[in-house]
Length: 123
Image (cartoon, rainbow, N blue to C red; front, side, top):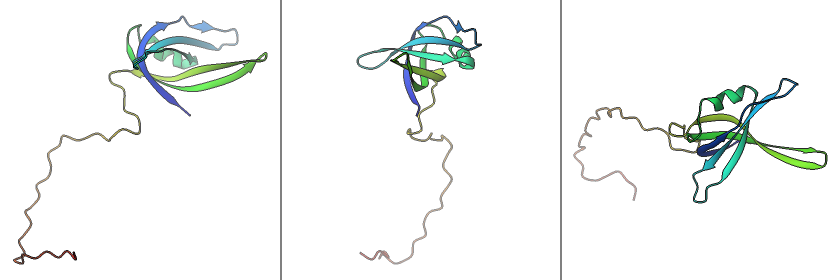
């Protein structure tokens, strides 16, 4: 299950490299809700390159998954960012209305008069 959140980048942390070859980069966005929240996301491996395109203060749309795990009896939750898009040019979600074309409508010939003033409706 995936989620998305809009906001402005508040903080971008340095990339963390691990001996196993794994690497990640955390960043925080501030939501644009009535009550703004600071939300921390993690971009892993190749997805860290998406974060480097942005600076603090840039508006973004983050698409993410929620990951949970247990370690030594403690439970942790990560918001795993798998896509970061610009906030202004973000594509609408699948529930949005389709795009409207500005192309001119084709010419429609006028309906021919039948001569009868009655319509064929059964009611």
